[in-house]
Image 1 (cartoon, rainbow, N blue to C red):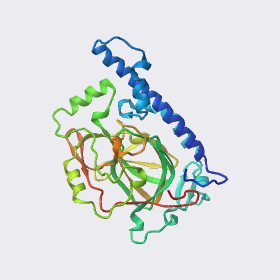
Image 2 (image 1 turned 45 degrees about the vertical axis):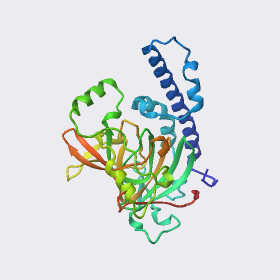
Image 3 (image 1 turned 180 degrees about the vertical axis):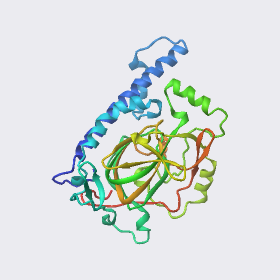
Image 4 (image 1 turned 135 degrees about the vertical axis):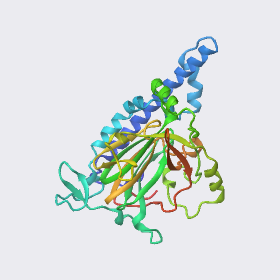
Length: 351
């Protein structure tokens, strides 16, 4: 763990405990699905029936990793409820060692209490003078449990953004600690698991030229700690970006459970602000982008499981183009105007 022991962590340790619990629940859910699929396959091939343990024990021992893309958002939402609740209970001011004020000066902390806090984007160390500080998102690492989950905080300067990207086969729970962000959220059509919705999606996307297979590029980003700037991407990466599959998606009409709105330019987005807790799933809101408000923002993310290229959970950036079926997302290289650098602040030490 990379968090220093301090008197009041704002409930962060409870978040860690809930993440451990939720991962175990997701693993059980995955094992049940594996058992069901194994029994179904055995029945289709008219093989003699076997016990659940006989069908799957060897595979579980060899590979205890989870595949969340085979589950519906509803079942995953039930499994992660304890984590959502613990993140709702976080004391953001205590976590970030901030003193709230009621004079409206600073980033929103809790609108119901009328409280605000000073943003901390200019207090993250080390300060990288060679980067555009006003456009550089900083990352504070909190915890990583290999192959299970990562916890960290993204610190946005005013107006800073994270471009459109995905979270393949992952669940991400986010708590806005302070400030607000404009969000654009998309759901991948091919990942929906409810039978009736699948049929509807098939009808709506019939004849589309977009391949809805997940894309996998950017081998340099295999974990969230590698979600940082690269000066110039090599021609090797350029070639991969050019040959990756596109995604057919639809706008998530209620992105992350927050009210949907439309920009003046006709694009769809929503505003999330502290103390919102939001979630995305493999087939719901899995691709999104963020732009911070006038005072910046801080967002605590829990990724279950973490990015891992060898497990086909690489981070891919996209460009969205509207078509008759919704939007088509085309893989692109990391935008040149995006920087994300890890740093230290308060209780959050370096890796």
